[in-house]
Image 1 (tube, rainbow, N blue to C red):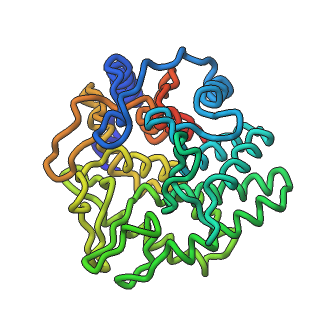
Image 2 (cartoon, rainbow, N blue to C red):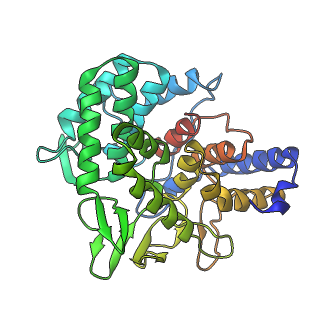
Length: 353
């Protein structure tokens, strides 16, 4: 972390973050407004109090259907493996075995692939069926992590065994050997080309991967973890040394923003800060913390995204979800309202796991 930012006191951080949150709440803009992602969110829900149980109750009420389907309200009310994985982790955190069971059973019945122990990423309510069987590796990772945690906590062998099966499938199908590295690819299809491999740094879910290594041994996961950490260190772009949502790997130490996607530290890459904070990777999150602190030290809102090539910043602030991640990383205030957008609200909840 840059020494200049260490000398800024916590009161300055708190004041700056409150200004950022106020601007965010006033504008009601979020990462969900980015083209091709989510539609603009509706007004936030009434503020639950206290933080914790009330937030969980609100999240469960607004984003979890009775049958165990997590509903992405900002994306046509679809469901996906990401949302199901978050629901499992949050239900585990809340200690609600019945809720966890409903989410797990719906996930297995509607998203589990028949050919391998991975999950299709998209289920659409209009079709009442899975409409894209390609997996999303981050969703698979968090599902396996949550199942392992729940299996141990509630002494449920079927969850422990399913977690083992999913871990093995991720290791077999979603880790490739290329450029003298073990690369954790975002999905089975669409990311490997002769010219390079496209990766998403926010898919490196460090606390989950650490649990995988504990369960299966470092011989199985150690190289994947080390190479992913090294790739994230190489993914520092622009004057703020920030990662971007998608990267292209073309050699052992050749990493650049993916050429076919906006080179932004934004909607996806903000989770680098989330998983880094949860996984105690302070060296990997230091540039993000420094950038966010520089914004707060200037008493200006943290922008929802920044182009790591041009330096252009979003004209609107982080959503409540992003602000909660900033609060987790910087040790400052959290938003007091839970967003009614699925993604932002989930980020808020995950920031407190």
